[in-house]
Image 1 (cartoon, helix red, strand yellow):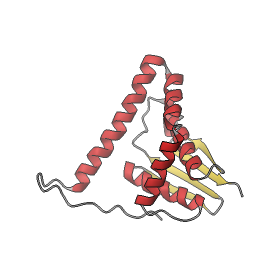
Image 2 (tube, rainbow, N blue to C red):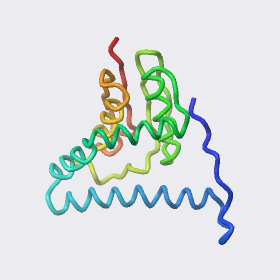
Image 3 (cartoon, rainbow, N blue to C red):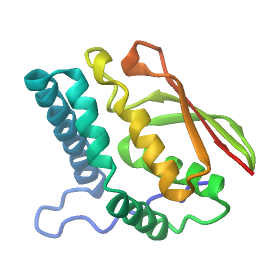
Image 4 (tube, one colour):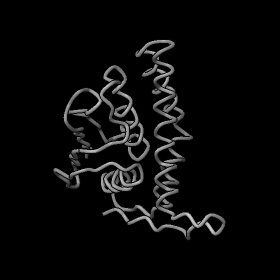
Length: 168
């Protein structure tokens, strides 16, 4: 199971609680990236927004380094599918998502996401970005892990559902 994040001390200058700063930064990062995708979609179309998103995440060395740093910082260990499951547990907690584990074993991880800061009623034509990101994370941990999104909130479903499997 994911480790609970430990907040640093409050700002001595402002006395702002860590949680307030954390939630603000988390919201700003989500808003910034969504704005980036919307701007590309407006200017060049939905296909271009997805293509650029995929290319951005395909800087494999940088992404793999980022994933490995994340695993190290949050002390995530275990076999590859366990690492992936715990990666997502921590990632979803950081970004403010809510997830329900439907099935977890050494060969499968099936998860339902019921709350996500990326979910909006508008971007049905760019909803594939989450699946692109999920595939990149999986490939970074182990290329034998397959990722499949069965449902997506941005595609009009009431929740997202992902299945990760690992080939022996």
